[in-house]
Image (cartoon, rainbow, N blue to C red; front, side, top):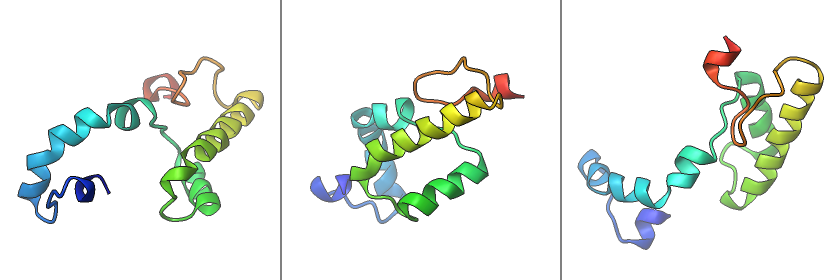
Length: 95
């Protein structure tokens, strides 16, 4: 949608590379801060709830669902309570 709005042709690798830095700059929060790492089980469950290609307007609902799953895992003692705002737990801490 972003490329269409800007009339960018991203049908080739060259087209993607030409606009990649601009896209990243404009979407840093979504790409780096609002990313969750999920185990396969929860990834599949999330898609079961929100579909194979979730609608962009379901972001808040997805975030809420993930936070509820995180709270359950903390309550059950599967992950430590020490977590960051947008991630369940760092890989290094888990393993």
